[in-house]
Length: 316
Ligand SMILES: [Zn+2]
Image (tube, rainbow, N blue to C red; front, side):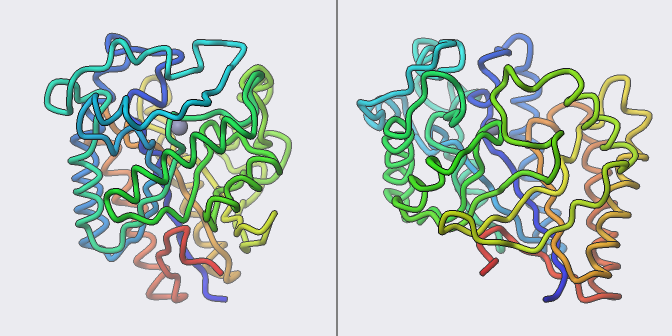
């Protein structure tokens, strides 16, 4: 098999972080994401780069009425209610113009209009498949509603990225029933295993952090496999934001990613990079420059080893 660079983005705006942040604390990143998305799209289009945009279903809605009309009856009963985006519906504005934090239909359109881009799902409500209180039935209702919103716009969802990378055999079975064919699994190893938030312990986070700048845990290139009837296109690495104290180490992170891309290209394997648009929302120029250097590196590998650019749906 030819080697490939896969890119997936978890497109969520405020829905993806509301349990621990709000407009005040993270609003600049969310608004910045709205600016970063067209710039990423431009870069992708110019370089023939494909990407999967795993989109929170609520972002397809044009108005609050449409959003309220799309809600399933069965909702997740998380033990920790902060996790439920249904808790925050009161603060959602009327439409995208008045509430750019919670609406994104114009950006969904923009993504659709850019060649080579796949629109996938990040569930309707940023659903957590491993948190206490969730159920497979509530997940089914959530995903069915996301499917309906996409279908209304003529989009057939094929690929899913699970919020916080939480999934189980039961969640995969639901995805398969509802017609999804591809998912982003997790990188191999203890540090990257799918766990609930409470089990994202400090040692786990610390190990991932060290790995991001050194690649000490080894190259996470992949060959796609089938799991519960879906194609697993596992993550290789999270593209970390260039921000805060770690910004001065960003070049090491980029170097780690490029080394791993080169290994994947030489071995005929896949390399799957992912991030959230809001990670680029502040310090945008530095983040875009980092991405641009990754894409340049990809172009070299394409020339030298025939590496292809793929969306998640491209794998058999
Ligand atoms: Zn998310």
